[in-house]
Image 1 (cartoon, rainbow, N blue to C red):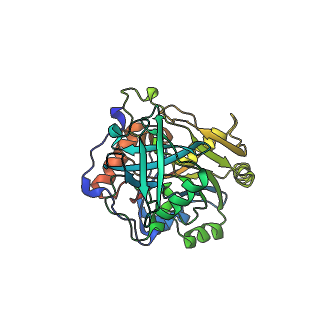
Image 2 (image 1 turned 45 degrees about the vertical axis):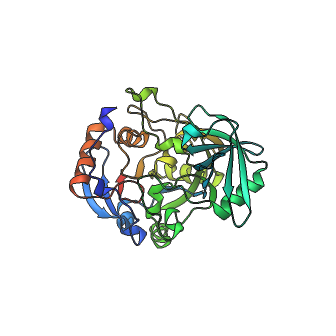
Image 3 (image 1 turned 120 degrees about the vertical axis):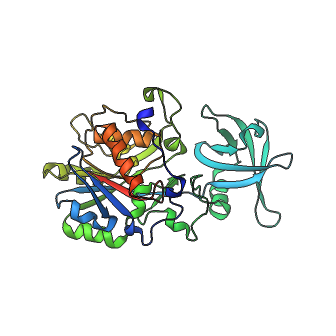
Length: 342
């Protein structure tokens, strides 16, 4: 686990996104260690070839964060994560020690209006199962009163909530943004298409488990809850076409990597369809389809950093890249700068 640790000065944790989006910095690395360049994200077309296929995650973050009251009057924060049955939803709660099975949580709205949820049970991951009565009520309530579930290291929400959504976000279902995609603008995507790069979309709904730190000394013992994904037929065909013309399949974010590697056959053929993935990519993993990766700088001791190290093929090379990013004052985490690894 110590192979994926590093020291980060707190002031390098980005508290706001780059403006405009594509003005974020971009560290360009080769997987063989032969290149390390400093660029700006809007320069991305200079590093991709016309034969390449860029794969984006079009998930959209749900305003799934609610604030309510406990039966005794105390305050409670709930992050609605996943529907598990009619009217029954999995949620993360704070303070968890005070939210026991049988408790009725009350979420006030306008005037006398309120939503109530009964705690059914604890989940293996430490969350709670809540019953709200019916699904339509929950969805409507989140749309009206829910807040975006920003990561805890971002202390002030952006004035425009759309800045925590990608410009291509379409399919609701995530509790966190696929942050590598936050750097794209419509103009940049048009420039990539004009160059001949194929741009296609898949969907993976990001759950909170992706960002949990590894608490086991041996990363092989770490597990993540499954996340839902869908690879459209158009995306599978675009990837197959790029591979046939010897273009690179470039994943925008670790979510895309996990979805494509889960959907890929042994020969790298990506199968269209929907499913769920609990894939944890560790050093030694043989990548079947992804040949390029755009990603942000991740939390230490995280599965995301481990995935990037596996993709680079050498965790020491990854540590040196992160040390360079700290020395060069790159901005880290969700609203931070990016890496392009080819």
